[in-house]
Amino acid sequence: MRSRFWILVAGVVVAGVLVGFFVTRFLNPVPPQIAATTTSTTLQGRPVVSFNLTTVAAVGTDGQGNGEHPQWVGYLPTTYLKVPAGAVVHMTIVQQDGQTGLRNEYFGLVRGTINNQMTLSGSGHKQSEVLSALDPSLAAHTFTVPDLGVSVPLEGVASDAAANAQEVITFDFVVPDKPGLFRWQCFVPCAAGTLYGNGGPMQTLGYMAGELQVG
Image (spheres, helix red, strand yellow):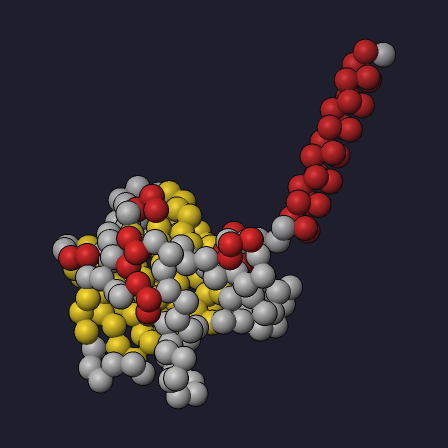
């Protein structure tokens, strides 16, 4: 009798775990993830891989979030990135959002990239420029990975710029030699309609926050 009881208990527990797993996956589906594109280039003796992202004022119905918040600001096509351990990441970000400025001028510094530099080109520049800092008033967003010490300010599109204007920011940084998962996000409060601009897309993975999977 006792053995039957414990078999019943075990069956209930297993069923509960399976139901919980199903509900969790249903309510929180695994987000789309993009892997870095492998290149034939090496830098500092490490392989170079690349990502291409775009920041937009509204992700639309086909953006990340599966249309749940089409008016939210975000990165496209996703904020879930996968990169091999020990690689140099060559990041290209096409910035289409407007200038909002930095509340903390410290984030105007380029930090954690190779030589602490970024290259800026686009509609507001006659030629590309290599910079180690950005005028804080010109920023729209940042690409910041706190645990890696990486932070890059992203210049916004000027309010008087022509239609379809954009700025292009490129930079390189090294990821650890060991596997790991690193949170990254924007540090410019740009969530209109939320408390101090820090809610909504600012705190939601898939919009202005993401994960960098190394390994």
